[in-house]
Amino acid sequence: MIRDLNFEAPAEINRWRTLALGIGGILSIVILVVALIFPEQREDALRAWLLGFIFWAGIGIGGLGILILQYLTGGAWGVVIRRLAEAASRTLPIIALLFVPVALGMTYIYEWTHLLHTGDKIVEWKKPYLTIEWWLIRSVLYFVLWGIMAALLNRWSARQDQATNAEEATKMLTDASKFSGPTMVFYVLVVSFAAIDWVMTLDPHWFSTIWGLLFAVGWALSFFCFAVTIWAALADKEPYSRILGKRHFHDVGKLMLALVMVWAYFNFSQFLIIWSGNLPEETRWYLTRMEGTWGIIGILLIVLHFAFPFLVLLNRDVKRNNKWLAAVAVFILVLRVVDMFYLIGPSPRTSGHGGGFHISIWDFIAPFAVGGIWLWYFFGELVKRPLLPVNDPFLESAIEHGKGH
Amino acid sequence: MKENIYGLLAEFDTPTQLVAAAEKVRDAGYKRTDAFSPFPIHEIDEALGIKRSILPFMVLGGGIVGLASGIALQWFVHVYDYPIIVGGRPYFSLPSFIPPSYELTILLAAFTAVFGMILLNGLPQPYHPVFNVPRFALATREKFFLLIERRDPKFDYGETRSFMQSLNAQEVFDVEE
Image (cartoon, rainbow over the protein chains, first blue to last red):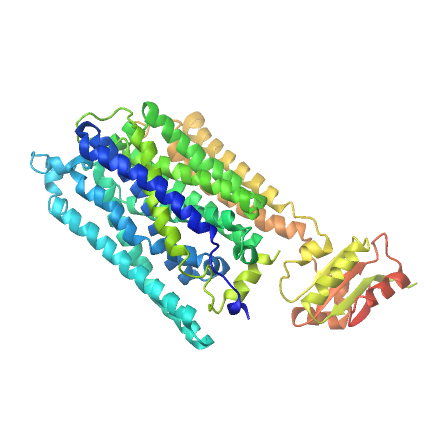
């Protein structure tokens, strides 16, 4: 019987954990101490922290989204990727903890916190929604809502592992699938609100109605790329060497291709509407981002975050070779950070000087700092359960699927 | 040797037998072969030594032609033939040209995929000799068939027939022209 086989995560992960915590812990302490002690560095450091936070939280929360999605769609890739998505969704506590510096330092990150009583017409008009207290309450609410989704789905999955017969195991799957339908709607709504509060309000005078979807899609892409990287790193070791086949990589590679296209599609939709409308309140956001170094980064994003991965992922051999696909995945992950930097960086700064290109050393360090801590927690969650849902009724066919042509 | 036959058709009970037989047929050097099954068997392409289809490249070509013609069409209309200033934007406004060009890319790529598939499969084909074997109707239900055509350079009626029988076939039929 397949359920009697051992699907425990390899011991090597524990070594990665220590390494991740070492790097992440030291760098995080450095950034946060610098932010605390040196007022002139505070804004740069905290903004960089926000960059790292949005990127890594995106992988965790994207994992929750994929967990919901794969219960809705079914399919072999969903069975095989489920435990990674579950582990990612269980990182919500550490994501909440990593959010604390953003919340505590919000007056150094968000310009609008200073504009509330200055007679700024637009910010004043947004006051029923945009206040510090209400912003903090909403942020907590997002974590609570995501937490409920993650907790329920993880609980059913754990029960399925303990199921003694097929009916029980099937019932857990049915419950999770029924829950996932309506939950998907709420998930995207919560992601939209969070993306607006945490990133779009950096520029309080600007708005975009597709903003939330940019993040829902970007975070899903981040998670897929992250999952492929983990798969490829563990593909030669037990138990993944027995599980993963070419077709699993092929399937997730296709999803990566689709999401790269959707990312470009949504970004272009936003751009085209603002470009066609040509209204001062909207175009300013793009005008800043199309000048000088920001403009070069924008072009680079089109070429490297869209055109290059799109063309490479069209190729079937790339999607079926786990090392090549992982190389593309890591490449996209790096570009995901650049994309977040492109959204966050040019926004108005609380210290007043803004507009021109600005990058600090912390923007390079923070993704590693936040990432180390997040990965440490993620790997800790990953080893807690077998790498496959051992009692899932579709498990055998899902493994078989990967070995096929 | 029979003169009016199209080829030989072997019948199998399971897809596994079919794939195993197909591999032996491929290794024996037969090229003009085909397999029939009620459902897709992904391994069969490799087992029969069928080369990968050129369709993806045709689709890519269709897409590129669509993209180019989309941009060319709009350039012709908005820049060359009847230039009008709209909303103060330049004649050649690439951002607004992208959606129609994109749609044309998809349209031509999809057309190439559908019609290319039909063409490469040799469809429509109102007559095919395999249907002269009455039991071939079961290929849509529960049986699996493997065909070696007479056109195959290695085809020799007696030898090929005994070879196919050695593949654990249920039965080997002559397919009449």
